[in-house]
Every structure is written in structure tokens, then in C-alpha cells.
Amino acid sequence: MKLAQQPSHSSVTKPSASVPGENAFQGYWRVFGGTWQILRSTYFWISGILTLTLPKVWQTKDGSERVWTGITLDVTPSLLGFALGGMAIMLAFSSGKFLEAIRQKGKDNSYLRKIMASFFHFCVVLTASILTAYISRFYDNDYLSAVGVFLSYYGILLVLATASRIWHTARIFNAVSDAEKP
View 1 (tube, helix red, strand yellow):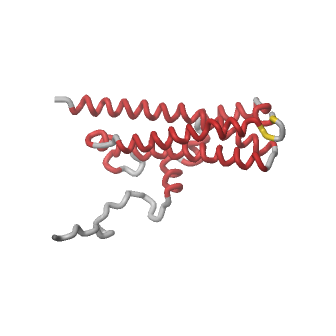
View 2 (spheres, one colour):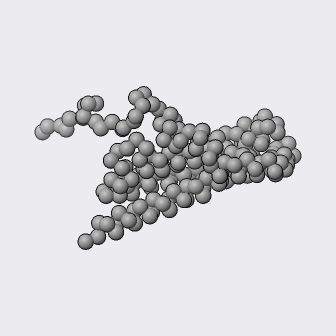
View 3 (cartoon, rainbow, N blue to C red):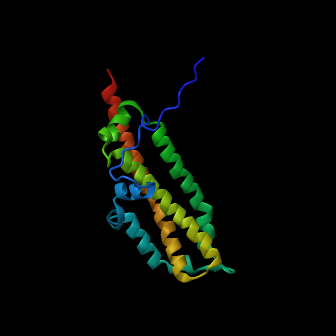
């Protein structure tokens, strides 16, 4: 009985990356669009406006603790689960003609990579929001609270951006499914 050989490193398909040695954060940031993409985001600016015009949200305390930290720590982990679940489902259901369509012949900035970068960005913002809330519980100051509330608003608003991406993906899936019908 012959044991199956393990594939050598040279026979394993390596992920395409236009920048050799690029780590996950660098790849996400490049495909996402970097600082320019964030500055173009309506959700980013709405978050900033809400933070600046509603200072009571980040200044109000219940005893010695800022109220926003409890809200963020209650709500944000569920949103993070939604983001990670969405990424997993997106990858799990991507097969056949649909996968071909969203991979766009392996383009570095394909729709698949762009949607994964959007989910990644959602996770980064939510994680930063959670970390800021934890830190704010021990280092109480207005600046840190304002940043934390901004990140919380931005993370919540990114739910809409993510839902929009999922909707667009469903439209692509529907078009590919219609094209496959005899």
C-alpha cells in the first residue's frame, strides 16, 4: 500500500499578489484603496459629523465609566461575528461560473478581492472600536472617547456598506445563474 505524497511547495498554488512579500494588511489596504478610499467614504464623514455634533455620547458617564464603552462592547462583537460570517459564506458559496465571474481571470483587484477587502476593513474598524472601548475603561479622557465613539459609529455604518456589497454580489450571482440556464 502506497501512501499519498504530500505536495511539494512548488506544486502548491500560491495566491496571486502583485507585490511580492506583501502581508495580509498591506494587501487589504492596497486592494481596498487606502486612505483615499476612506476619505471618499460617506460613512466615514457621517461618523465624524455625528461624533463632533453629539459630544454627550462620548462624554456621558455612569459613575466612573463612560456609557459608550458598555454599548460598544455589547453591540460590536456581534457585528464582528456578522462580518467574519459574511466573509466565510462568501468564500464557501463561491464556486463554478460565479467564482469565475467574480475572480475576473485572477485580476489582482478583482471583485472577489475587493469584496474581501471590504469585509476585512469592516473587521479592522470593529476590532479598533472594541480595543478603544476596552482601553477607554482604564484610561479615561475625552480624546480617546471621541475616537472610540467615531470608530463605533463608523463600524455600525459599515453594516450598510457591507449589505450593499452583498446585494451587488447577489445580483452577480443571479446574472450568472440565469446565464447557466439551458
